[in-house]
Amino acid sequence: MPDTPFPRAVITRRTLLTAAGAGAVAAALAACTADAPPVPTPTAAPSPTPWSPPSEPMRFPTGFTWGAATSAFQVEGSLAADGRTPSVWDTFAARAGTIRDGSTGEPAADQYRRYEEDADLMASLGLGAYRFSISWSRVVPTSTGTIDSRGVDHYRRVIDALAGRGIRPAITLFHWDLPQWVQDAGGWIRRETADLFAEYATACFEAFGDVDADWMTLNEPKTHAYVGHWYGAHAPGLRSSDVAAAAVHHQLLAHGRAVERFRLSGAAGRIGIALNLIPVYPTDPAQPEAAVRVDARENRLFLDPVLLGTYPDDAVGGEAGQLPADPVTFTGLQKSGDLETIAAPLDFLAVQYYGVTGVNPGGRETQVAPTSAAPWQQVLPEGLYDLLTRLAADYPAIPLLITENGIPDRSPAVTVDDPERLEFFRTHFQQAARAISDGVPLEGYYAWSLLDNFEWAEGYTQRWGIVAVDFETQERMPKRSAGFYADVIAANAVPPAKHTSWIGSINPRAVAG
Image (spheres, rainbow, N blue to C red):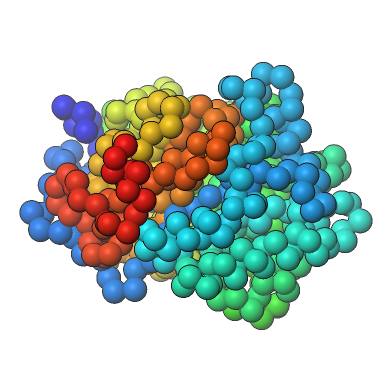
C-alpha cells in the first residue's frame, strides 16, 4: 500500500450516476431493455482508510473451490504433435521482434507430455480444481472442419488424469490461440468466426460433455481484442481500434452461441465466461467523467452485454477514455438478436483480477498503487474487494469464481523463494474472504499460474508460477508460495500474518531453496 492512500472513489454504476450528464446515462441504461434492473441510488465514495484484517484466520465456506490455472499455448509445447496446426501465436512468435527474448511456445512447460506428473503435483498441493484450455488447433486443425481424434483423445486423457485424483476440470475453450487457418479467413474481424467457434465448441461438448466440469467459453476477450487488435503487442499483431471493436463484438457473439450450444448438448457441469476486470479510480473524485468512460471501456463493455443484454453507450467513441473506434460502425455490427444471444443465461461469471488503475481528469491512466515486476500491474488487494462487491451490487445475482490472480517473480531466474507472491496471495485471499462475509457469492479461487510458462510477448522473461520450471530440464520445483497455498487449502482459511510454515508432503527442494 502507498504511504498516503489515494482517493478511492472507485467507478461503479452507482458513482457513474454522480458524473456530469448522469441523468442521460441513467436514462440510457434504463431504456436498453424493457426489464432492465433498477438503477441503484448514488452513494458516497468508499473511505480511503486502509482495511485492517482481523487477528484471527479468515475462514472460507465449506465447499469453496481452490484451484490453479494455465493455458494451452503457454504450457503445452509439442506444437507440431498429433496433427496440431499453427495458431496465431505460432505465427506471431515467429516474427522478429515480437517476443522479448525471441522465444516461442516450444517447449514451454512441456505439459502436453507431462500432464500426469503435473496432475500428481496438483494433488500434492491439495488443489480441488485445475483450469486449463483446449487448443482449437488440436481439435479442428484445418478449414475442412474435420475433428482430429488425436487432439480429442489427448484432452480426454488429461481430464481422466484429473478425475482420477479428485481434481475438478475447469475447461476454457479459447485462450487467445486462434487457429491460423481461422485468422487467414479474417479472424475475429469476421462475423463468421463466431459460427466456426460454435462448431468447435459443440465438438468439445460432445466429446467431454459427460464430465462434470466448469466450462469457460472465452478467456479475457478484452485483452485479446485490445492488445492483439488495437495495440498490436499480442497476436495477431493488428493495430486498429475499429478492428478491435469488431473483435469485441464477434468474440462476445461467439461466447453467446457457445452457451446456446452447451444448453442444447445436454452437457454436464456449468458454463460461464472469463472476464478480466479492473477497478477504476479517478485521481480527482470531483472530476470523474473520464474515469467513467475508462470504466465503460475496460469493464462495462463486457459486463453489460453478457449480464444485462446491452452495450453501454459511453464505451466507444472519440472522448477521452473511450475505445477510439467509430460508434456508428460498432453499432452496425450488431444484428437483430445478437444481444439476446450474448446475454444467454450463465451458471457463473469467472473474474480475473490483477490490480487497479487510476484515471486523471484528462482521461490518462495513472499509477495509484505499487507495481509488480510487470509494469502494467498496479497491486492493490482492496481493489479485489471493491470489484467483487461492485459486481454483486450492480448486476443480477450470479455465482462468481476468481479464475486468475497472481504476480510475477522479480527475476527471470529459476527460484523457489517468492515472498512477494506469498504476501500477494495472503492479502488477496483476505479480501476475497472479506467479500464473502459481506454477501458476495464467491465460490472459488484459481491461482495464476500453476507453472512458470511462456508469458506471451514477454516470452520466458517473466515467471508467474507457484511452481518453478527449469525450462532446460523441465524439472518442477514448488515455490514457497505453493507451500503457503497448500496450507490455506488444507485449513480452508487464510492466516492473519506473514506465514512461513510448510506442508511436509510438498517437494522438500522448495524448502531447501
